[in-house]
Amino acid sequence: MMNKAHNGGWVIVISFVVAIMLTTMPLPDWVINWRPSWVAMVLIYWCMALPDRVGIGVGWTLGLLLDVQQGTVLGQNALGLAVIAYITIISYQRFRVFPLAQQAVLVCIYLLLFQFFNMWIRGVMGIPSQHWSIWLPAVTSMFIWPWLFIVLRDVRRKYHVF
Image (cartoon, rainbow, N blue to C red; front, side, top):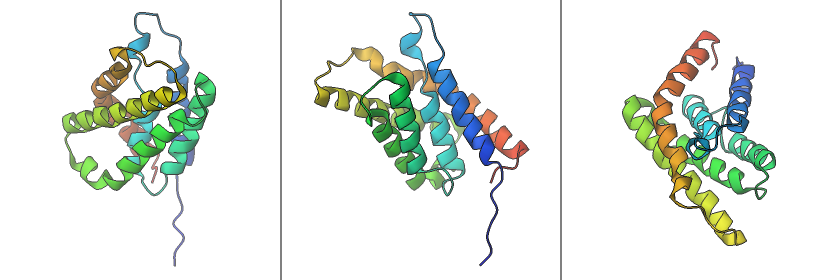
């Protein structure tokens, strides 16, 4: 049995670090509710592109990092990102062949599911849910997805990440 060497693991790590940095970047008050779900989008991309390297464990770990960074209940983001990773991995072959517009709609649906998990956990903890603005990151992420996909695909090809 041949051992297949993996290239570019550092590219994957750097992309997640940049996504976390974009998540923590301060924004004006009027834009804060529209902040895209950068970490979830990058996770979706890598789960779709390299499902054998980036999976549920990576999603869970990133979620725990987000929980610590945001000061939320430990496991809140972890559960949502692990579910997103799982759904992306089981459907990655279909996801890849969709045009970018359909992928963007699917990303929006995945992120709505992520927000639902966050809202559900807040409800279980007795924290009152926010108003309708909790769904806005999924919408902005849908519009950013085509550009993010193209940038990450070009980086993956340039650095021969496989």
